[in-house]
Amino acid sequence: MLDVRDLSVSRGPTGIVERISLRAGPGRTECIVGPSGCGKTTLLLAVAGLKAAREGTVELDGSPVTAGDRRVALVLQDHGLFPWLTVRANAGLGLKLRGVPAAERARKVDAELARMGLAAESGRFPAQLSGGQRQRVAVARSFVLGPDLLLLDEPFSSVDALARERLQEFLLSELAGRRLACILVTHDIDEAVLLGAGVSVLAGSPARIVRRFENPGQGTPGYRRSAEFLSLCAAIRDTLSEWRVL
Image 1 (tube, helix red, strand yellow):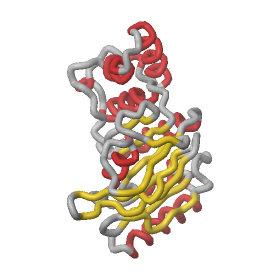
Image 2 (spheres, one colour; image 1 turned 90 degrees about the horizontal axis):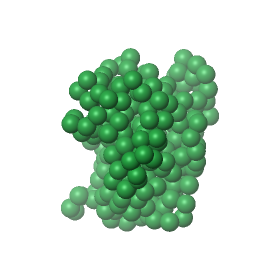
Image 3 (cartoon, one colour; image 1 turned 30 degrees about the horizontal axis):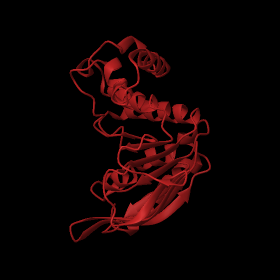
Image 4 (cartoon, helix red, strand yellow; image 1 turned 180 degrees about the horizontal axis):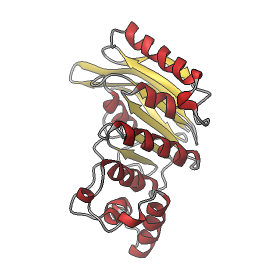
């Protein structure tokens, strides 16, 4: 269980995000939607223990999250792959840094790449992959670590619309079979509603959660085309409009 309480982050004397509280349990994805530049990435880095908070706490299963916490995996929007490493080497980099023996590392990585449909690309380099494939490698690198908490920073913003939809559906199916808490931040309202069991709207300056929506239809077949999906998207747009974001 991730428990974030009254988290505030500042840059110098200026507040970036203010008194953010959220929770996510195993098997649950919480999405945070807000405009570009509102502090979503800053919030995610603070939750990961990689940025100091002015106040508030971040705990996972009752203990504080700190920098380098092995229970946490972070996927960045630019995928963060090393161009001189193969797909297999990129996917296994975290395990290598943790000192996992080569044979065990290869077994875990190859199994994860196969599960994610990347086995045929394991010997290729990032430049030889599509944008969607590169992002799947980044996700595989996180999954292979066996985290309790997965943090996703606008993971599909750099791919085209069709690839984005395919990756969203892929991530939805992958998360359904894994017992980990997940926080995803995005500026894409449709993405937040498709993936999040709960959707929080971040707005203001400093940014704070101005409204939170439960999303009981998340994960149901054909949800993207349902009236419930469109209605929730409209409600989130209205909320952002009230804050003069849209």
